[in-house]
Amino acid sequence: MPKKNIIWIIASLFAFSMLLFPNLAEADIIIKKSKHTESTVMGQPQPSKYEEGKTWIAKNKMREDMAENSIIVRLDLNRIYTIDHSTKIYSEIDLPVELDKVFPPEAKQMMDVMQIKSSSVRETAETQTIRDWLCQKFLIEVEISMMEMNIPMKIEIWASRDLGIDLSAHKKFSDAILSLNPFTKDLSEEFKKIQGYPVLTISSMKMMGTETKEREEVVSVEKKDVPSKTFNLPKGYEKIPYNPFK
Image (cartoon, rainbow, N blue to C red; front, side, top):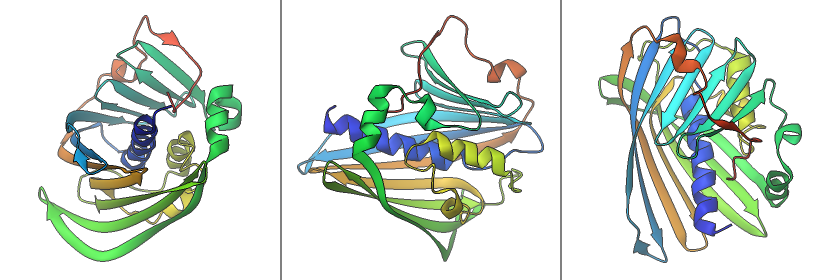
């Protein structure tokens, strides 16, 4: 697998985990987001990428869209769906997630050579107002070991409790989201330090002369009834085994 694809996969997995960490809301909520990605290879800038996304939250249900990909969480069914609209395929994962049983052989081979070497989540006293929401800064540092290489990743999260989202503990939901990501499935206790919804997430990672930076930000939050069909699988899609490395 090309190293640029590996970097994008790792960054995307962490981004999904950070954004989906908050718990259920008392009322239906629609959150609009934007994401900007920049990268350099051997110091040479590559074309940047801008994407728009949306999150729908209802009782026991959540859906996250970004570009051509969706993830649907159905706690009422004890199930999670990952969807690729560009190829019309989806994967279905039962809760609680057991990656060893879910992963196909090729994904297990990737996990054999990629491990979390160290990780930490640090709460800071720094605050700032972003789009009228008072936010607190949290710093995450992760080091991934892959084929005798150490890949450092840094994430800066500005989280707020002012978005009107119910952030009370809901252990089953948050653990399910983290367990879907092979790089965060064992880090749920660390991530509990993050209080609030991530309004702004800035991440960076370096690997073999390639540096990738992502900035994802909440644009708006609206309380509005979400149609139940939002959380259903699209018709006519092919089911495949869950493999986050594809």
